[in-house]
Image 1 (cartoon, rainbow, N blue to C red):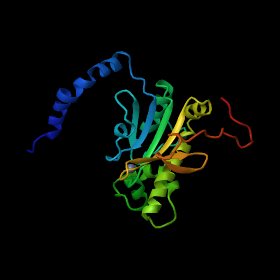
Image 2: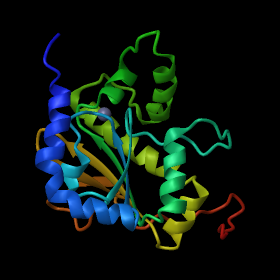
Image 3: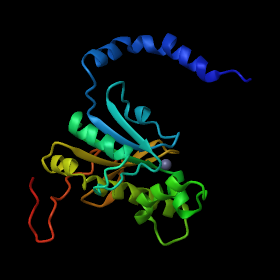
Image 4: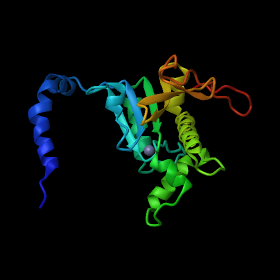
Length: 225
Ligand SMILES: [Zn+2]
């Protein structure tokens, strides 16, 4: 049997890393967590939310899934892990920021252009949440990049269908942040809702999308709840 390196890592965490955070964790336990940010990111192993944002313990409420997708708020009320996390982060934790973070070379986006194992029934269905971002072209590197970014915007729009999110965004209590992380450059590109484009963080004026327009019903009446 090979060395259990994971066990070694668990031991060295407690011995070497934990002591420097001990007090912080103890405070977070006695006072509870109060993260300001809900971070919805792709499960990709090359996306490291803590490293990217410089966040420490207690700062990020993390949801990760294949593609960084947001399921529709469609009244089906099933075993929807991501939807449950959004509700918890907004209603219980009262987060003030929601980040949706996609990235370059995303396997989920690639899979939508290619083939998925026929045995992966759940994955097939899950990828439906990104299909509206697909472009009717050959999947070139440029097309992939654009699709990855379009997928982020799509999730933000779906996020705005969650009544508790929309309400707070319109009240200015929550800001939305659509990010596309370019792994090889170490740079996040930020979605700006006004220009409709992604701006490199080095050139962007802020990390958020800017104000979303208020929701307008089909009869022209602005929804206030
Ligand atoms: Zn990905």
